[in-house]
Image 1 (spheres, rainbow, N blue to C red):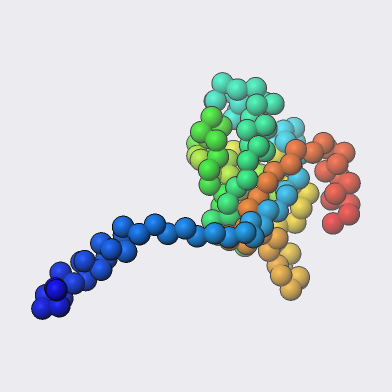
Image 2: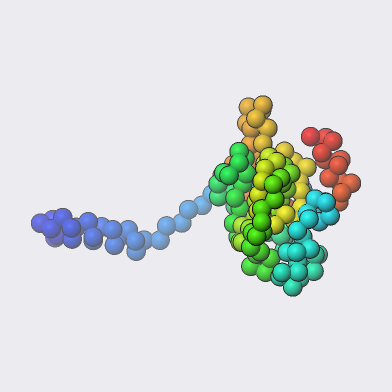
Length: 169
């Protein structure tokens, strides 16, 4: 027994814990679907992201919208979600020179992260699309659409669908 040596006792207990298998199950994977109109005026950097990664625009959209992204945290601006795990084939560095204004709802890539600008603000992410959903509405009781711990799934939509959703918000 290592009771006479507190260091050895603690070390032994920590090693026992580290050798155990912990399985955390959460049946409540909350997925928020975010509609995105990719390219054009809504995604001015989509062509650049495709070019940098030697992919077609369609491939970039397919890769970006084919997985669920975990909301790690909100920050930078109120309601701005940081979503990691962008497919390595579409990971793209930030812009050399940030834009002075990125519109609210703009969906961007910066390295292996993707995110959604919750308010109009300067920024240096590669903008590939925009959602008509409002991510930050300070007048609401729950001002942010997304919260840390939730999941986001991007759904490609047409420009026509964008304006229909925006009109209904």
